[in-house]
Image 1 (tube, rainbow, N blue to C red):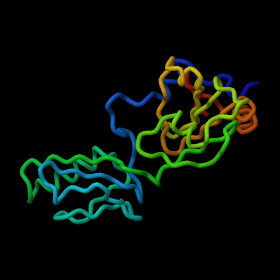
Image 2 (image 1 turned 30 degrees about the horizontal axis):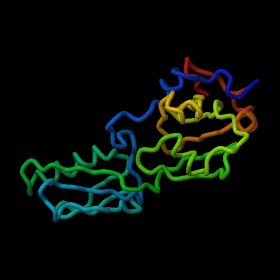
Image 3 (image 1 turned 90 degrees about the horizontal axis):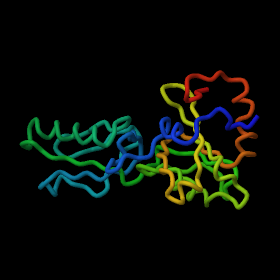
Length: 210
């Protein structure tokens, strides 16, 4: 059987792995060690930084309030944490904005019919096309309608099939890629890499978890 058979495609695929929300700034991205952040405190230039790195322990050192734990939080959650701590003693209603400049804590694996298979960093909010570009794009023989993203969702492994040709032509959204995702391009690569797993593991629900 085709390894992608039974996995959701079309609209059902986007129900599992949606495109980024318009205007969302890495809303679902969880910060990790060595990520580089931009922190802005409104009208407080001495408390604003173009680049502030999360240390190996998952913390950032911030003026006035000292060590702030960042690992596992979203940028929005860290913004709220810094604002709350500044507001306790130092500022009245501080407005804090945190964005991800670059990430080394999250990676995506790209396999199959691409020119440079490998493991690549997810920089902030990334998409399928961006991940494929990091792998130097699919080969000439790649089956662009058989690109599968595998992801752990709620402790279960899920897969969804996307049509890269339709995405490139603007006929379908570009799905978001998260750290830990595995992207497999082309029928042969999918079959070779996941055939046994798909045959032996149970499926759950409409979304075909395994």
